[in-house]
Length: 223
Ligand code: DC
Image 1 (cartoon, rainbow, N blue to C red):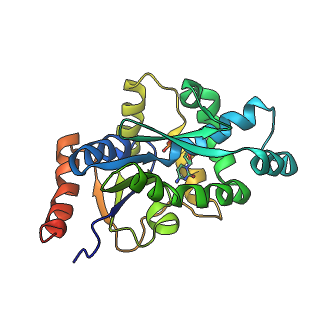
Image 2: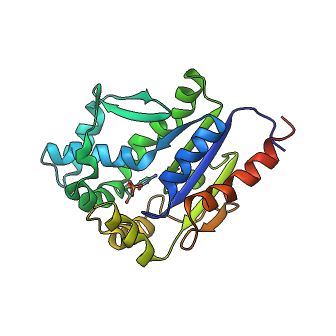
Protein backbone atom coordinates (compact mmCIF):
# COMPACT_ATOMS: atom_id res chain seq x y z
CA UNK A 1 0.00 0.00 0.00
CA UNK A 2 1.29 3.48 -0.84
CA UNK A 3 0.90 5.82 2.13
CA UNK A 4 2.51 8.96 0.72
CA UNK A 5 1.34 10.81 -2.35
CA UNK A 6 4.93 11.76 -3.34
CA UNK A 7 6.33 8.79 -5.24
CA UNK A 8 9.84 7.82 -6.25
CA UNK A 9 10.36 5.50 -9.20
CA UNK A 10 13.86 4.02 -9.55
CA UNK A 11 14.95 2.58 -12.90
CA UNK A 12 18.31 0.85 -13.15
CA UNK A 13 19.92 -1.03 -15.99
CA UNK A 14 22.81 -1.19 -18.42
CA UNK A 15 23.44 1.20 -21.30
CA UNK A 16 20.71 1.24 -23.99
CA UNK A 17 18.42 -1.04 -21.97
CA UNK A 18 15.51 1.40 -22.43
CA UNK A 19 15.78 3.45 -19.22
CA UNK A 20 15.54 6.96 -20.67
CA UNK A 21 12.60 6.41 -23.00
CA UNK A 22 10.57 4.59 -20.39
CA UNK A 23 11.47 7.12 -17.67
CA UNK A 24 10.31 9.96 -19.93
CA UNK A 25 7.04 8.14 -20.60
CA UNK A 26 6.44 7.59 -16.87
CA UNK A 27 7.24 11.22 -16.13
CA UNK A 28 4.48 12.28 -18.55
CA UNK A 29 2.01 9.71 -17.38
CA UNK A 30 2.31 10.34 -13.62
CA UNK A 31 3.59 13.95 -13.52
CA UNK A 32 7.06 13.02 -12.27
CA UNK A 33 10.32 14.93 -12.57
CA UNK A 34 12.62 12.93 -14.86
CA UNK A 35 16.16 12.64 -13.51
CA UNK A 36 18.79 11.00 -15.73
CA UNK A 37 21.72 10.42 -13.39
CA UNK A 38 23.86 9.16 -16.28
CA UNK A 39 23.79 12.74 -17.56
CA UNK A 40 25.20 13.87 -14.18
CA UNK A 41 28.15 11.47 -14.44
CA UNK A 42 28.58 12.53 -18.04
CA UNK A 43 28.62 16.25 -17.16
CA UNK A 44 31.18 15.66 -14.40
CA UNK A 45 33.29 13.61 -16.80
CA UNK A 46 33.14 16.34 -19.47
CA UNK A 47 34.30 18.86 -16.86
CA UNK A 48 37.23 16.64 -15.79
CA UNK A 49 38.24 16.15 -19.44
CA UNK A 50 37.93 19.89 -20.07
CA UNK A 51 40.36 20.47 -17.19
CA UNK A 52 42.71 17.83 -18.58
CA UNK A 53 42.33 15.62 -15.51
CA UNK A 54 43.05 11.91 -15.78
CA UNK A 55 41.32 9.27 -13.65
CA UNK A 56 44.51 8.63 -11.65
CA UNK A 57 44.77 12.31 -10.62
CA UNK A 58 42.73 11.88 -7.45
CA UNK A 59 43.85 15.12 -5.84
CA UNK A 60 42.94 17.11 -8.96
CA UNK A 61 39.57 15.35 -9.15
CA UNK A 62 38.86 15.92 -5.46
CA UNK A 63 39.82 19.59 -5.70
CA UNK A 64 37.54 20.07 -8.71
CA UNK A 65 34.64 18.36 -6.95
CA UNK A 66 35.19 20.42 -3.80
CA UNK A 67 34.99 23.70 -5.70
CA UNK A 68 32.35 23.13 -8.34
CA UNK A 69 28.81 24.22 -7.36
CA UNK A 70 26.06 21.79 -8.35
CA UNK A 71 22.54 23.13 -8.84
CA UNK A 72 19.53 22.00 -10.87
CA UNK A 73 17.60 23.63 -13.66
CA UNK A 74 14.18 22.13 -14.39
CA UNK A 75 13.60 22.14 -18.15
CA UNK A 76 10.11 20.93 -18.97
CA UNK A 77 9.83 17.65 -17.06
CA UNK A 78 13.60 17.05 -16.80
CA UNK A 79 16.24 17.94 -14.23
CA UNK A 80 19.43 19.35 -15.77
CA UNK A 81 22.54 19.57 -13.62
CA UNK A 82 24.29 22.93 -13.60
CA UNK A 83 28.01 23.08 -12.83
CA UNK A 84 28.81 26.57 -11.56
CA UNK A 85 25.54 27.74 -13.08
CA UNK A 86 26.12 26.20 -16.52
CA UNK A 87 24.21 23.26 -18.03
CA UNK A 88 26.54 20.93 -19.94
CA UNK A 89 26.10 20.83 -23.71
CA UNK A 90 25.88 18.07 -26.30
CA UNK A 91 29.52 17.10 -25.67
CA UNK A 92 28.26 14.85 -22.87
CA UNK A 93 26.94 12.44 -25.55
CA UNK A 94 30.17 12.51 -27.57
CA UNK A 95 32.65 9.66 -27.91
CA UNK A 96 35.28 11.21 -25.59
CA UNK A 97 32.76 11.16 -22.73
CA UNK A 98 31.36 7.74 -23.77
CA UNK A 99 34.87 6.31 -23.48
CA UNK A 100 35.77 7.97 -20.16
CA UNK A 101 32.54 8.14 -18.15
CA UNK A 102 32.62 4.66 -16.58
CA UNK A 103 36.20 5.24 -15.42
CA UNK A 104 35.30 8.49 -13.66
CA UNK A 105 32.02 6.99 -12.35
CA UNK A 106 33.99 4.20 -10.64
CA UNK A 107 35.87 6.69 -8.44
CA UNK A 108 34.35 6.67 -4.91
CA UNK A 109 35.01 10.43 -4.44
CA UNK A 110 33.00 11.19 -7.58
CA UNK A 111 30.10 8.96 -6.48
CA UNK A 112 30.16 10.43 -2.98
CA UNK A 113 30.05 13.97 -4.36
CA UNK A 114 26.92 13.13 -6.34
CA UNK A 115 25.10 11.21 -3.61
CA UNK A 116 23.49 14.09 -1.72
CA UNK A 117 22.93 15.98 -4.95
CA UNK A 118 20.95 13.07 -6.41
CA UNK A 119 18.88 12.61 -3.25
CA UNK A 120 18.22 16.35 -3.29
CA UNK A 121 16.34 15.97 -6.56
CA UNK A 122 13.32 14.87 -4.52
CA UNK A 123 13.19 18.39 -3.03
CA UNK A 124 13.62 19.90 -6.49
CA UNK A 125 10.66 17.82 -7.71
CA UNK A 126 8.51 18.83 -4.73
CA UNK A 127 9.43 22.48 -5.12
CA UNK A 128 8.56 22.43 -8.82
CA UNK A 129 5.13 20.93 -8.13
CA UNK A 130 5.69 17.38 -9.41
CA UNK A 131 3.90 14.41 -7.92
CA UNK A 132 7.21 12.63 -7.50
CA UNK A 133 10.30 11.74 -9.46
CA UNK A 134 11.51 9.02 -11.78
CA UNK A 135 15.25 8.59 -11.53
CA UNK A 136 17.29 6.38 -13.83
CA UNK A 137 20.84 5.12 -13.45
CA UNK A 138 22.85 2.18 -12.15
CA UNK A 139 22.48 2.38 -8.35
CA UNK A 140 19.21 4.22 -7.82
CA UNK A 141 17.21 1.37 -6.28
CA UNK A 142 20.23 0.05 -4.40
CA UNK A 143 22.06 3.13 -3.07
CA UNK A 144 20.39 6.45 -3.87
CA UNK A 145 16.78 5.57 -3.04
CA UNK A 146 16.75 2.02 -1.62
CA UNK A 147 13.28 2.83 -0.23
CA UNK A 148 11.93 4.04 -3.58
CA UNK A 149 8.21 3.50 -3.97
CA UNK A 150 8.77 1.50 -7.18
CA UNK A 151 11.95 -0.15 -8.46
CA UNK A 152 12.60 -1.51 -11.93
CA UNK A 153 15.62 -3.14 -13.51
CA UNK A 154 15.83 -3.16 -17.31
CA UNK A 155 17.99 -5.52 -19.30
CA UNK A 156 18.39 -6.52 -22.94
CA UNK A 157 20.69 -8.67 -25.04
CA UNK A 158 24.01 -6.94 -25.82
CA UNK A 159 23.48 -7.25 -29.60
CA UNK A 160 20.12 -5.50 -29.39
CA UNK A 161 21.57 -2.74 -27.22
CA UNK A 162 24.48 -2.18 -29.61
CA UNK A 163 21.96 -1.98 -32.47
CA UNK A 164 19.93 0.67 -30.58
CA UNK A 165 23.01 2.84 -30.00
CA UNK A 166 24.13 2.50 -33.62
CA UNK A 167 20.66 3.52 -34.80
CA UNK A 168 21.07 6.70 -32.70
CA UNK A 169 24.27 7.38 -34.65
CA UNK A 170 26.44 6.93 -31.56
CA UNK A 171 29.78 5.22 -31.14
CA UNK A 172 29.50 3.90 -27.62
CA UNK A 173 31.47 0.99 -26.12
CA UNK A 174 28.48 -0.29 -24.16
CA UNK A 175 29.82 -3.79 -23.48
CA UNK A 176 32.97 -2.34 -21.96
CA UNK A 177 30.98 0.26 -19.99
CA UNK A 178 28.70 -2.48 -18.64
CA UNK A 179 31.72 -4.51 -17.62
CA UNK A 180 33.25 -1.57 -15.75
CA UNK A 181 29.91 -0.49 -14.25
CA UNK A 182 29.03 -3.93 -12.93
CA UNK A 183 32.47 -4.91 -11.60
CA UNK A 184 33.47 -1.69 -9.81
CA UNK A 185 33.76 -1.82 -6.01
CA UNK A 186 31.46 1.11 -5.20
CA UNK A 187 27.77 0.82 -6.10
CA UNK A 188 28.10 -1.65 -8.97
CA UNK A 189 25.31 -2.07 -11.49
CA UNK A 190 23.09 -4.92 -10.26
CA UNK A 191 19.40 -5.71 -10.01
CA UNK A 192 18.40 -4.41 -6.55
CA UNK A 193 16.53 -6.90 -4.34
CA UNK A 194 12.80 -6.50 -4.78
CA UNK A 195 13.03 -4.69 -8.13
CA UNK A 196 10.87 -5.85 -11.02
CA UNK A 197 13.26 -7.01 -13.76
CA UNK A 198 12.10 -6.48 -17.35
CA UNK A 199 13.91 -7.90 -20.37
CA UNK A 200 13.32 -5.34 -23.14
CA UNK A 201 15.08 -7.25 -25.94
CA UNK A 202 11.89 -8.17 -27.77
CA UNK A 203 9.61 -5.44 -26.42
CA UNK A 204 8.76 -2.10 -27.98
CA UNK A 205 8.62 1.04 -25.84
CA UNK A 206 4.86 0.89 -25.30
CA UNK A 207 5.15 -2.69 -24.07
CA UNK A 208 7.96 -1.83 -21.64
CA UNK A 209 6.04 1.17 -20.31
CA UNK A 210 2.87 -0.89 -19.90
CA UNK A 211 4.75 -3.35 -17.68
CA UNK A 212 5.83 -0.47 -15.45
CA UNK A 213 2.55 1.43 -15.45
CA UNK A 214 0.52 -1.60 -14.33
CA UNK A 215 2.02 -2.05 -10.83
CA UNK A 216 2.23 1.73 -10.28
CA UNK A 217 -1.41 2.24 -11.21
CA UNK A 218 -2.48 -0.69 -9.04
CA UNK A 219 -0.61 0.68 -6.03
CA UNK A 220 -1.83 4.24 -6.51
CA UNK A 221 -5.48 3.39 -7.08
CA UNK A 222 -6.62 3.81 -3.45
CA UNK A 223 -5.02 7.29 -3.23
O1 DC B 1 23.01 6.09 -18.38
P1 DC B 1 24.29 6.46 -19.18
O2 DC B 1 24.68 5.38 -20.12
O3 DC B 1 24.18 7.81 -19.81
O4 DC B 1 25.39 6.55 -18.03
C1 DC B 1 26.72 6.89 -18.33
C2 DC B 1 27.67 6.25 -17.32
O5 DC B 1 27.52 6.87 -16.05
C3 DC B 1 27.48 4.76 -17.08
O6 DC B 1 28.25 3.97 -17.97
C4 DC B 1 27.95 4.57 -15.66
C5 DC B 1 27.72 5.91 -15.02
N1 DC B 1 26.56 5.91 -14.13
C6 DC B 1 26.75 5.42 -12.87
O7 DC B 1 27.82 4.92 -12.57
N2 DC B 1 25.75 5.50 -11.97
C7 DC B 1 24.55 6.01 -12.30
N3 DC B 1 23.59 6.09 -11.39
C8 DC B 1 24.35 6.49 -13.62
C9 DC B 1 25.37 6.41 -14.52
